[in-house]
Image (cartoon, rainbow, N blue to C red; front, side, top):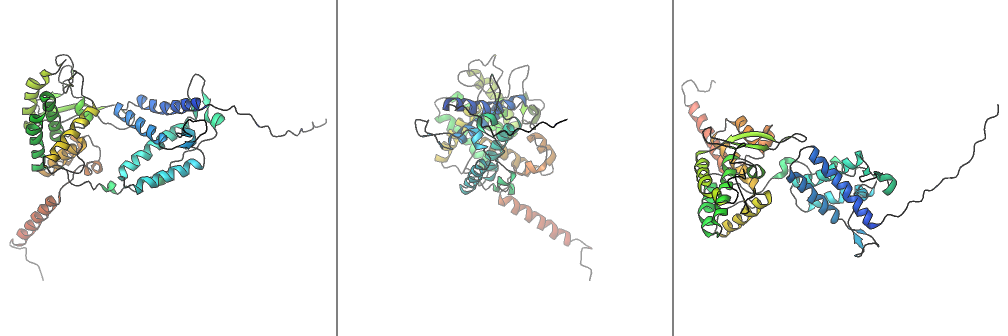
Length: 387
């Protein structure tokens, strides 16, 4: 039996058809949208999806790439180019250095890099261009790899959150009073201004997030106000990744109850659709308030309060009012850590630690109290040192 001769075959180069710039844009958008669609299957909020969409859109647009086919001579970066072996990694390293050098908070820098890493991880695990005909990215644009490594993330160190103080005690009272009196009286849209005041009071008195406040309902079947139990309920509480919204209850303080009764009886009824739109807080068109709308209102209020001479933190956000609630309650009831965690929707004390922001005076008073107790104990009979 003779062995067949081996034929020598020369290397064959496959001709790759050029891809138009329009098609590249379409493929890039399909890949990014495919990643964003995974948020829907994981039951993530619209706010989370839109936040990642904005970040990814701006990041790719802010990375110009020379291209003669473009009318301007350059165009945005595409997903597969960001994941090009070697070059993609260098781009991420430069981006990470830029975040640190710009003085951006560590937590924000990690959020940016985390969003990119999740997108690239998705592409690495499913390296295809979605469409009527699914095409492998490697066959059309070349191989890809994950360019973001854990070593690119800035050090945690509690995020070095040096944002000044937060509103507690009398400062919070003064701010609330400014909104209730000055802001409302100077606003031509009194009904909307009174609504804004009530939302701000909800944030500072209950610790609910802005998104949770916007989702509160006043009408059945899912009314979230329980006056007799002194409880507020959110059915849209933040949960762990991959799980749905979580229902939880928090405190409904006497001040907030009194304000809310007036709001429900005299303010909410002034908005269109108040009798059939279940939302507690409505817009002037009768729709549920939006997260963006809440931010615009607070920004306007904060600017006006600063102009009036109020002593406010450098950046006052809805989340800062949530910190105000946590800090105030912890100072009044330091033994109720686990209860506060439950009301805040936290599952570990480390997260809560980032919300409770005592001022220096609080620690000084606590140290004085401890020193006083020690001095008293030493003055008791039998407390003399044994020599």
